[in-house]
Length: 144
Image (cartoon, rainbow, N blue to C red; front, side, top):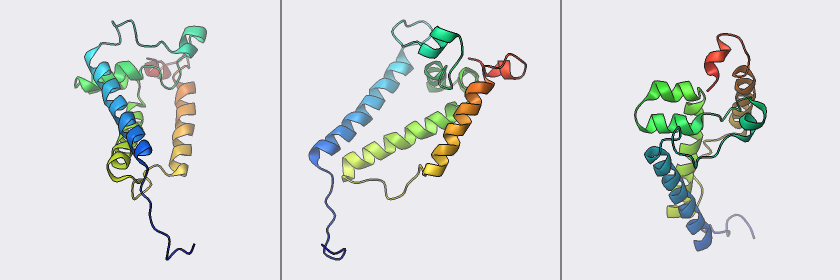
């Protein structure tokens, strides 16, 4: 079939339903993090790397950070995890992409997460994960 005769086929109802369910799951998870304080609620998962080794992974403190962010305490959120703005951006883009796919049946008309940008993000995560576990000031400030 040539490109001129090929027609766009929107996503199936199953795919669109899964995208809507994913967006709904993100809303429900965000509501749970907003409502329950992760420092006192006992059902939030503990970081397996931290509980086994005592080292903080790059994601340690994100749940507490998002709770603080949802309640307007930006400085406390950044104190829990300095990479929180990057994670918030990635989660926001993922949420928007799922809602767009659920409504339109196709991907976003642009690629907000270029593979090179993701590689840079992964390198930043690695550097951040190492730096926050160094035992000297100012790196100790990064520990959650």
